[in-house]
Amino acid sequence: MARADLLCDIIKYGLSGDQEKLRQSIEAMAAEEREKQHRVLADRIDTLLKTSENRERHEEAAQAPRVLAAGNSAKNFFIESTPEKRLSDLVLPEYVTTFCEEFVEEQLRSDLLRSYGLEPRHRLLLVGAPGNGKTSLAEAIAEALMLPIYTMRYEQIIGSYLGETASRLARLFDYVRARPCVLFFDEFETLGKERGDTHETGEIKRVVSSLLLQIDSLPSYVVVIAATNHDSLLDKAAWRRFQVKLELPAPTRASLEKWYALFERRNEFDFGITPGTLAKRTLGCSFSDAEEIAYSIYRRYVMSLPVDSAKSITEHVLAQWSKQRKQGKVVEDGGEA
Image 1 (spheres, one colour):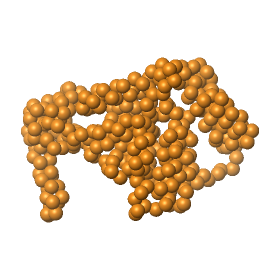
Image 2 (tube, helix red, strand yellow):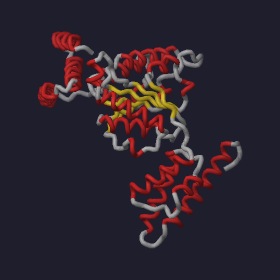
Image 3 (cartoon, rainbow, N blue to C red):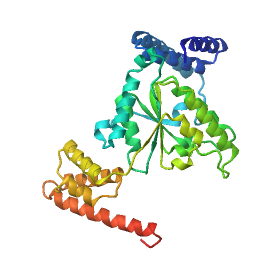
């Protein structure tokens, strides 16, 4: 939002006494100044806000207790976390790695782009089967940008009454609009379903329309990453809101081998068989499955020290995994487990 618009909003909400909107507008101005590298001014604004917030809390504590309606705070609509996974921790196709590096660079050099009348890309859709690394990639991008990641809580956002979900979405986006962050929608089809679906109600269609308008209104320092296992269920207009769509394929034997080798190096651990052999024997699993297998072996090894060997533990865990996989396939094929 342009500075003139922010100043008008601050004056308007200050005169009307709308403290929540006033605070959001001031926070948006602080975020904009920080983006322009005006850190001293941004810090002064943040200090004034914190001082005001502490005073308000003191005044509220002196008053009679008030019971707030459940879910009234926008912070209830997401889980905030500090990202830990790095892009270097992930095994990605070359085209995905190249894009992520460019995406991060655009955000970190946004001032240069804006000096030429350009904005960095900030809306990304990840598509792929469960366990192929969509959530990990979103976290790694947030880590590279040095931003917190806000993961949506649909059970808190989706309401039972007419207009309730759209209202909560509006509160959520008003809150994040003033904060540089990564806004992560896992299983995005939960909110962004095709509006032409005859089985859906008019309320769902209104929610999708509201969601898309809110995404459009976000500044480029709020990075939106959505992930879906069912891209065919997404509304066509939702597809168009994202500047880039990345498909994360199932791991190949080569990528699994590389992942197991990285695991050994990070943990200074040897499976007792080569990463190539391990990849061959677990081919067909997702990265999530591979991570579970690797940590199961590592945990058993640590608990058995100093008696057992890593190789025997690896063989035992692989035998268990193979048996569970066969049982799951029987169930999927309609047989008995």
